[in-house]
Image 1 (cartoon, rainbow, N blue to C red):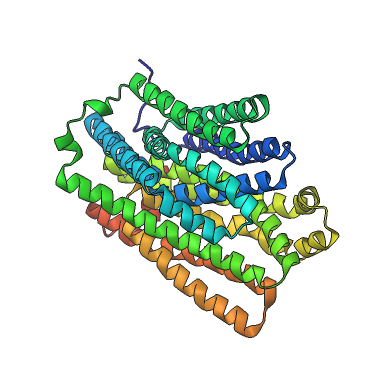
Image 2 (image 1 turned 90 degrees about the horizontal axis):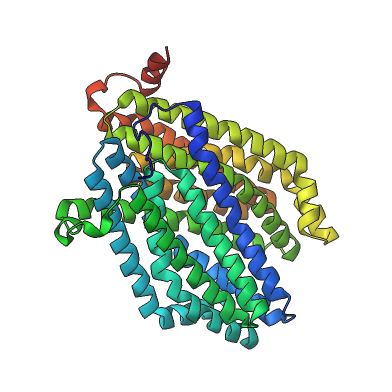
Length: 459
């Protein structure tokens, strides 16, 4: 049987890096998949086909990202069960997540026609692009049950602290997708239908591989009785965590949409420049997300083990490493931002505009480090209601700042300043709420400051 390791290992610098770096590498493979897919279809020489697969990728990213709560909630609940050494609850959590993911995926398949109609209407593409998009959409939608079940599997392995398996699964799915796309599109000439079928097959393959790996870890989710899966209090808690994370995610998406929509009002050059700079920020996010995952695992396992000292140390290590990488990524983004801009666009105007706003874009990973780390901490501890409320409060404040930016005619510089304010507001709000949440989780030491406890433990 494959070893699972010590789920309640003491948080250390090495442990944080061992958890974070594999997920950073896994994140890097995702844009590679989109690049290969677009390149393969682009070789067919039809601009409408390339536009269709690009729009299809955006639509499915939006759909599946809306269900990202399944991965996060499963990781947090699994980490707590693993920390408590309750293997039966680990399996029950996975069984509930698989059932929820499978049912949600089947619902997307059943509702594909109204969903597709709405997506195509919003896209507003030409008839040629829409025709290709319809072909791609109505095939790839059948990947939904597999994709959402894979979120459950990924959350389960991450909650156990096996980010190495998370990396293996992500890379396996993406490589299978790339190989099948090359074979079906270029080899057999199946065009967009081949690209869509590649995604369906790769997700199904990934689910089979993930369940096999979990079985070798000793997991038996399909042996869990339905009565245990549908247990009232447990299901209520699972749904509450998922709903909180969904609301938080929708609020985050709203903030991004507002940024893009207002940027578009400043002209095509600024819109294109912001898109280039946004991708620079996303690359930094790959590193930060890895440390957020590490925080989910370590903090969740400490909460499950009722190990306050371990929890406080996990918080400090996660915050420290995330902030350190945020500083490093921001410095690299600023130093190499010009080369990145030149590599992404050949337009002299867009290059000039992007360089003008490089400084705030490069600063964004550092400002985002705090909310990224706290997101992982809050998810691991299942403080999702507080995370949701703080996100909504930050979104409201962000909206007020954006209104001031428009009223004051501060332009694109004001827009980037507003976005930095939004990131900072999230992180500061989470930091302020943290001591109270920690006291509710570990009430025995309610009179002791969290950071002082961690400092005492290190001494």
